[in-house]
Length: 637
Image 1 (cartoon, rainbow, N blue to C red):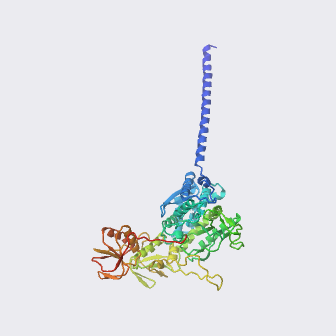
Image 2: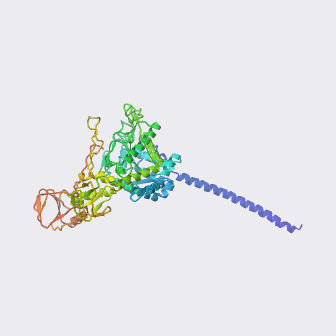
């Protein structure tokens, strides 16, 4: 063989060895690269994995003496939203003192992807006019039940917001069949605190005074304006926080609301529905039964887990809308009240806490004499998941019942047919306030285009008509009719049973507005003014002073604005006349100025009537002290 013939084969072998070496190096490099990629991916996964509340806060949630602050809880919900596809986070607005009011929406990713559609289904079921039963059933099959959960409207009841962090984490991370059933069938709406300002004030004071004799009680109101009674604002809507929560109700149309509270330390360990008597007759029977069903599911879960001291059908009633906007909007309000500790420190009694004899509504007495924050957290977890699991299991039935409740109101024929609010009122401002309450509660309002007759009375054009056969007729009816609190006795022939809370809430009586209840249908030419309706009142020209009668509460609104702008204000000490018109003692007298004119014009939309004086008035009057303010004193929260 010629020598030259060997060269190609040698070269081929050399090339093959070089190629093999190169491929070997490339393979090793690729393997190293894959390993690096895997390591980096693992590192990123570990870095982005949702932390437990204990990891995030640096202590065991519910540990004696430890509380997570509200800003940190907000951060934790943001953390869950950033690290899992089951959670969405929103800041809905600012509170009275400027803290964030936040909402976490938790569900299966597939549900969150079609959230707008699920909300649209709720809205269609909430207003079933023109909807057939068959179509409602189809929508119920397609839809998901919305479960609205919130805590600490009372800010010293700190345990439930701590529990909510664990509830949110479990929903966001747990892969169990039980949690999967909840996520697949529910959209859970969580507001960690209905009073964020109070959470900040109370918990900051706790840490500031920790280790001192003053560690228990925050020494001021834990809501700037309402203190403990912020949960009596569900029909007047005076506070920012109330209106933010009502916006959630109106936007999402949930099928159930769970309101987490705490109560005293020495009786039962927890209360859940059913409620005690009386029930407001405007609460639909389906909703009354749903309270019972969910409450007993919670009680069963507690007892089966050995969590003693659960009580139901006791102390708390279902009477006043001051606490329960929800029950007039197609859903039950589930109240859970867990026994309190000394804010975050244990409560220790002289003997076993609570009743020690079993009863039909108190099956498992609590035998210990101590009670801890961690137990509040655990009981809160149990009832929240019991409630969610129950509704998830019967999701379609809940949506169908939601439709049935609303359909019954839309189709009702029972008296009263409507309420009529005459246009001419003693205080147009309070009339506007009453109508605003109705609008906030999504009640439909009409105004007459021409005079009409109803209930044997004549009404002028412009009078308002609120019919009860509408989606939220329950809210209108319960707020505008006269209450007849039932005669409940401790035993037959015995003394009256003391009411738990408010016994009357008729708006027109509280606000001094004339509202007439009309029993039978009538004919009238009506225009829908639900969205807007002006009560603008003309302002008489004034060369010397503006005159505002004492009849209207809007006068105080005007005076507050004038005081803030340092505009002089006087109040008549006696009756007087101006331009042939009589004015009562207490009339506000505002000398004209550029600032006075601007501010008076600003409040005209409230319905405030303003007269003008072209020449000086001779009357004894008191000048308000500059920067006059209203003080609020309390003995204790």
